[in-house]
Length: 158
Length: 158
Image 1 (spheres, helix red, strand yellow):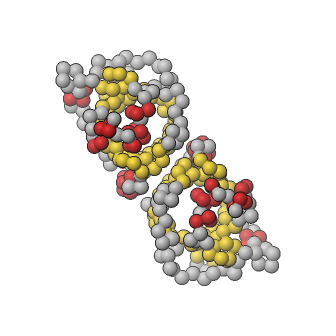
Image 2 (cartoon, rainbow over the protein chains, first blue to last red):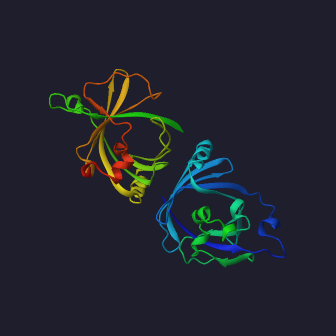
Image 3 (tube, helix red, strand yellow):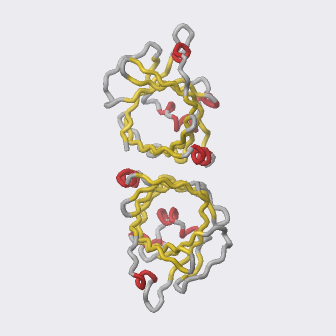
């Protein structure tokens, strides 16, 4: 079990380019759905390229939540995605380092096309980090941006 | 992923003794709860003595359902039991062989005290097997006896 402490931000282009367009980074392709999707508990099935995961997360308190993640066979993850309620979320994930921190930039597609968010994992909710120039408004506390919420209320319907 | 094909029966005593009282078998102690508990999907957390499991099951059709089970750390299973909705199911499980088949006899405690059921796993729903003398009425198709249902509507409240 881990404690996940994350802050989440929108991403803006600089001179018309999104951060991954300057970097040549190759993204992971993520597909994920939810077997259980409530405020108190989520059970997420994810494929990340050729790897499958099942992940249980507890309720969020002060930007942190308990997380239990297990790697599973890709074929089983694909079968369980078919059991998921709501929509399947699809996104490209670019992992970028900036001044000692790892950023995950998610470029959504499908029903969440147009949404791009960047997440940083911290050791404490108030840990200091330098903000990259492409970082936009913080949305950590806005429930619309949680992935489980995007499955039921996708960005294109906001 | 496996396909689980099970038939379930009540258990009766013979000359006042339940089957495990003749056998000297040592049971497993099972505790289990449900992160998700619906007709279509269940996500079960279980501890069986010192081992933890997370198990996803699909909808039941003709006594069979898809099952995805993963062994996990006991400590993580215990933490996830605390996230489960509904009651935690507690039971002793005795595994007995009879004429080439493995029976699992579950003696419930807590809010399901008094309930004893025996399950047999088959290769096809109509596979032939010999019935042990302690086997009672079949309850495969009675939804009250599914463990996920016993979590929300325990035997003592029937």
